[in-house]
Image 1 (cartoon, rainbow, N blue to C red):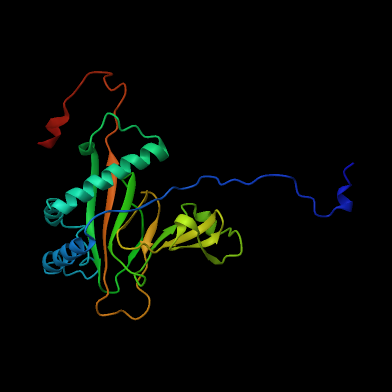
Image 2: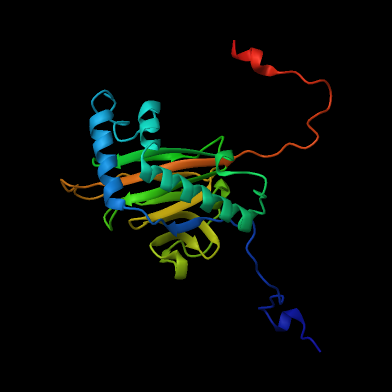
Amino acid sequence: MTKPINETPFSPMSGTSFPLFPISMYRATINLNHDLIAQFCRDLVKNNIAEYDTNVKTQYTTYFNKKVQEYTEEREWFKDFSDIVKDSYVDWLTGEMGHDFSSLSRNDIHLFAWINVYNAPHSHDCHNHPNSLISGTYYVKVDKHSSPIKFYNPNPASACFPMGNGQDYEGQDNMNNIIINGFGHHQHEVFVNPTQGEVLMWPSYLNHMVPQYEGELEEDYERITISFNLYHNKPIDSNETGRNLDYSFLRK
């Protein structure tokens, strides 16, 4: 017979806990010549960006220069990079999210990539990537002193209702080089310190930033990355209703 509640002050139910609305992140190592690519990136930014870009905040990136991006896309290593990233995108979204790519080719996947060379106290404010499905970064040259990438819980209320003891803890297994503010599944913000050659991919809506380098900046400090956005064509069902009209006249 169960004792009355007043005789057993601590009376929890026999329940279970499970994570709700989890967010998947992809992590892998890409098989490319990182040193060769790093040299290409630093030369490109030094010779083609800094000479005309007077804004110190944007001198480190090729994001705003279409001609430089097109020149980069013609390199053989970039073609390899593009193929591997697109195939990984297909593999991840097929297994993790149930997308069907069986009627598509690589050319049906849009990859927009840009180079970033941090060699000063650069930083990148909190942002996400609209008009994209998956975003990511290839870490061409980093070390243990490089600034991490920081991700935020997309539920802003999580910061107002903290769970756990609020201490940082190191993850285990595939969570190496990751520090999480929060406890268990109740994560408020996550810092990832990738190693050279690693690639991270995540849903584009996820807010993230690169904090400014802390500590004394070494003269040869470099953090070289290639960031990118991905999305793909999706077949349209029942698209022949009504009367067809060719919209090419809108280009005039």
